Image (cartoon, rainbow, N blue to C red; front, side):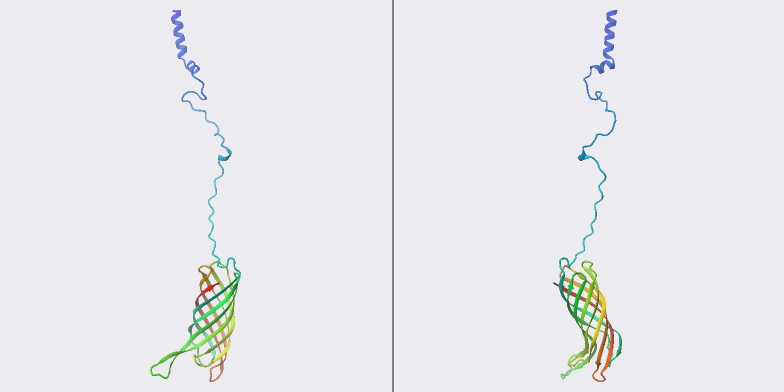
Length: 241
């Protein structure tokens, strides 16, 4: 009985959990399904350490094209078509009605702001049919109003779009083709407009100018002087060098 009791006791001890654990090999963690206890997260290497979130990408506005970049002095020349609206007339033999005309101009831009321009304008007014010596051959005659002005222009540099103000003064004269000028005097103008550049060398624009014109010896009969106030509205194109 003692022998059998000793064998039974030895078998029970060998099957107990403590004995089973003692017979297992050493592992870092309890074998085989136990998980390590939760603790602080492992330290990242410095190169992989998480930092603050990256800022959103900065959106940079496209730079305005500047046709004057790298240039101080530029020459330009162009032409325009305009309407010439008579606002007021004082004196004179013939009443001048509104008309239209063309101009040619050229000048220099000094940097981005200051410009000097010379402009010749010719507008046609008061059409009058006239016939030559051949029967049935007639052509309209116009009263021409011509000016030559030296203008100062001050630009607002906004890249390709360049608004400006302008003022100028110069001689003026009027008459019909083939005849001596009826009147000669002085004209001044003031106003503004804009140019829009397509690249560095070509521009389109528009200008609105008020003109004050004082003419002496108006009319071959009485020699009466006249004063005119007109408003011109033009569309122009120019080449820049």
